[in-house]
Length: 244
Image (cartoon, rainbow, N blue to C red; front, side):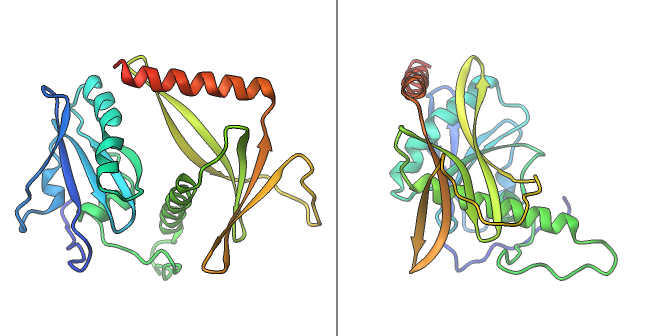
């Protein structure tokens, strides 16, 4: 991309780590004040960007990194993130397939105000901009959910934020024979008839923020068999990560 954008200098600095494949650890980069973050994106690098301003962490994978490096970086990133003492949701992104939020962070894209709908473009319909805004809002919702502990006896099924309803899904991603879990919010596309509803099979959980209702979760109680399966799955993923 030919056009670059300046990052807001009033924000806290972003910490950047590079994976040392030989040592099996992330090393923090001592960045010169004049260095632009997008200049660090080398196809042979596996980088970790920790953004305290948006409580977000990005594991960026260059196009030429090995599968082992990808898995190793995903395994080590949470411990590096935790040393900063700030709850940040980690997301893995690939070279040439970065989402808008990451491009804004490193200065490849101009920042937009996500609290306001963009002005319609007289030449081009604003469909792309709306999709970008929806994606960024979903990332914020997932960050809030990551901060709330959910007992193993319950499964999160639906999340309601304002007038939006999302299906909540945890997807298992297999990398080099190992399993990494990734959370997803899927907008509800089915047409729901108008009327009042009761949720006999669900337990509602409300999250309040500054005396306002932030979001509503609909939780489904797990059966004893599901609880046991979930415990075994969690134990397998934990041991699988430790034995890598």
